[in-house]
Image 1 (cartoon, chains in turn brown, cyan, blue, orange):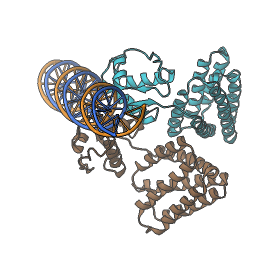
Image 2 (cartoon, chains in turn cyan, yellow, green, red):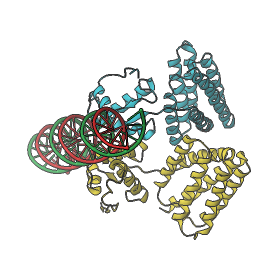
Image 3 (tube, protein in one colour):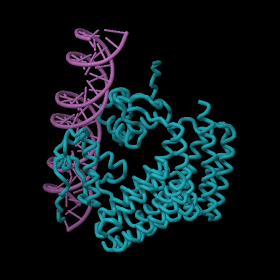
Image 4 (tube, rainbow over the protein chains, first blue to last red):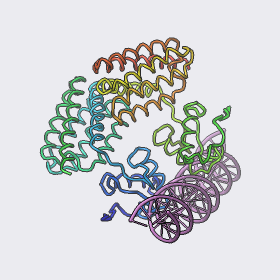
Length: 226
Length: 226
DNA sequence: TTGCGTACTATTGTATACAAAGATATACAT
DNA sequence: ATGTATATCTTTGTATACAATAGTACGCAA
């Protein structure tokens, strides 16, 4: 097997007010989302510990948290990075449709005018960056969905959405790398904001759900390329 | 302070094919749900370790998982058991309404006839136990909701529902201790099953949501007693 | 050659020792 | 009496050593 070098970062910053276990956890999350570890890769405690220049103890803690979330799973020996097959991707987006729909409806009920303005600002920012910058688009997109979840005033919904977002990140390239997607996504966001501003919960939910279905279409295109 | 004795069980079973960290985690979960530890109680690693006759290492692992889920939270020193104020209870049930509604709709689409029969069997069992047995009612109720989630064919929905269920368990006495609730709950369940059997997703969702709202009414009664 | 058993080794699981941080108590000054 | 500085002590965070277990390779026999 062609032992692809694991290029995830070197030693970890120590004593920055944050415990090593936490730092290792973040480092591994980043590595996972950056694709430094890929689906099916094996993770050994000692290997991670040596790379980050810490002992196995905080590494075990971090891996435990990763395993609890399901991002890695126990294998014959140690842990392997979880991979999502097509049916799981469909379920994941189905779940997002439920959550984002509910969040948009609740946001239409509860969002303050300040929060609605913040949504508009985020979308304004997306037209001011160059279309090709998919990473920045993805960042603003996350900000948009998080802002809606916050406006929904339900911390369980917020947590669940955040976790789904983490799973999406595990899929690798974002749907904004599909040509034309940044623009259509922006239009859909605008429509959702308008419905929320009009306090039309039904419409906000319907639009948010359609938005996620469009995202799934792009995701499936992306998966077929691979 | 009147140092209520912590009566959570003694030493843990060792070597039963399950790692100590896992065993400690389960033990603490049970203790939490049984009310042996109450909201606001402090958890010290050493104390738990001595009681269960293990070292701090597996205890830390278990506490880490508990903290990741939010059941305990870091305090000035160590961890304290999380307590839910009234607004969180409302958010919790609002989230359940979303999830159970979605699950019922999807179950109406995907449930096999075998699964629908299984739902009927569970409800049949509830009429065969004596009304006063709230614990058994609660067990069957969980089985009912889990069966619907499974029938919905979405593992993210299933996981999220299970987590909400764990939060509910943290609230202590179940809504079945409210007089008359076992009976009305049964009726509501029957209606949900009928809608699922009729493949009427809209109605199944609407009924499931109403069911959770009724459960919330009982929960609020229960909270007012305290 | 193939199947099985056994030794070995890689890796995780647990305990313990030690370091660091932070709370609490005490003494002293005002 | 009250506030502040400092010492002490409790508790968590990290490293390391050791135990247990599961995979792998090797040898031997059929």
